[in-house]
Length: 170
Image 1: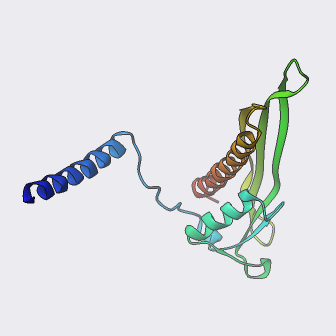
Image 2: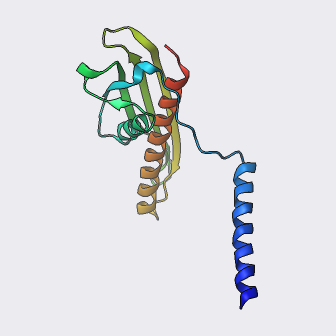
Image 3: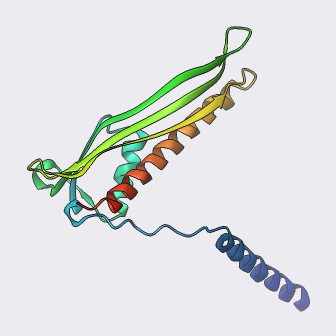
C-alpha cells in the first residue's frame, strides 16, 4: 500500500511540473495590472449603453487596475465612450433563402479628457468581428455560439481599451 501512495504523489507532482512547463513554454503568463495614468485615479465613465457586456466588463477591469469609478463632480478624468455598437450583418444566403453565414461586428470609440475638457488620450477606435456559420439543424447551438462570441468580443475590447489607456501617456 505504501508504494502506491508514494507513486501517486510523485505522479501528481510530475503532472503539476509538466503542466507548469507547458504553460511556460507556450508563452502563457498572468497579466499584470495595467499602469494607468495617475489622472485616472478617480474616473467618470460615460458610455453608450452602460449595461452592455462591454461596459460592465470595462468597469470591472478599471476597478481591478486601481481606478475608482465616481460621479463627474469627484472625477479627475472622464472616459468618454460615444460608440459601443454591435451589428450583425448577413454574409451568405443558402438555396432555401435562409441565412447561412453572418458576421458580428463590435466597434468601440473612446477618449480620455480632464473635467475641464483638455484631451489626455485622443479618440481611438477599436473593432472586432467574428463570422458565424448558421446550422438550421442546431438553432440552440447557434444562439449560444453567438452569445459566447458577443461576450468574448466585449471582453477583448474592454481589455484593449485598458491596454491603450495604459500605453498612451497624457
